[in-house]
Length: 299
Image (tube, rainbow, N blue to C red; front, side, top):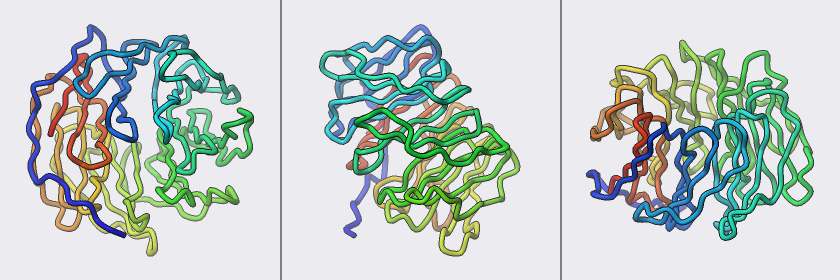
């Protein structure tokens, strides 16, 4: 697999967006031309690369917890505290379908890498896989004792990771729906986990203020990364697989070397909890959002 080089230094760009309410999630489109954000209590807004608003999606009756773009960038997937998952046409702004089945807050929603299915995670303790065409549930996994806080496919679509409120991480076979691994090491709830680009490792972040790198073959914790002074809300691999970027309640975004655990760079500018980050496909731009209602770009 060809490794894409990343920028070695990011700076805050002059482009930003300010809203009167908190912004909970941000997501790049697959081609990097658009950004979606969950804005305020129940709205999704789509922006161009200069953070000019181009579309507003309304239909959820409560906070939007997660968003994702389809591979062709024409559809947005969202999930909400209203216990529903919704699909939207990006161009028309119209809701295409509502998926119902979870019995508590839906915290996570993602398209599969092949685009045929949807993955959702909920505080009802389950992960569901849905058929995109029919909108029907085709697999229910977990029935966890603990609430699911985040769920995501591996880049090759073979596995699913779920991050749990009981400080554990579970790995599932996406085809069979069987649990294949359980990772323990965090001391408090795991807020996000993500597979490395080559699917060999996993990065996780927690309210215990640590980032951890896991070797999936050995099921061992390879590195504990410390430096943030508050909860770490989000962590993502950069495209090279050798670095991760994290966002924290301590108002900072930090970039780390996964092999040494050393901080490469600290990005400052937000004035409140940094809720989420995403990285463009080419690794050249980072988008972040905050409780202060601000979306910022770094590149």
